[in-house]
Length: 171
Image (cartoon, rainbow, N blue to C red):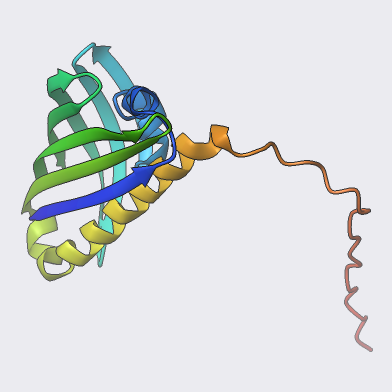
């Protein structure tokens, strides 16, 4: 399956690069992420829970940065496995500065799924994967732009109080 998209980010190209190439920061946006472990500068591993239809599993995913051309382009490959299922993929990110505070992100991902997951959910996978990919990049954009927002101020209203209804004793 092939996926691609574009995002306009309200931050510098260098800031976008730092976020997108930091597994711990970008991992906050991976749906179902249970854990992440950095192995070295170009490898990291993740545990990700995933479910579609009647299928659910915890995948162990190994990721390798194939190319890191700061702050313009990155390419990675990944291999994941769970009981009787595998997922392989490659992804590429391209960053280009629109101006000093705005960056364009173009991304592509090619994903191959095999085993039980492919047979159980084959017809659902394209839609589910597109939805999860969209959620991921929306979250990435939100997390990266958080520092641009003014901090929230405490609401000065008194907290609302709720009364619990008591069950009437039956006769």
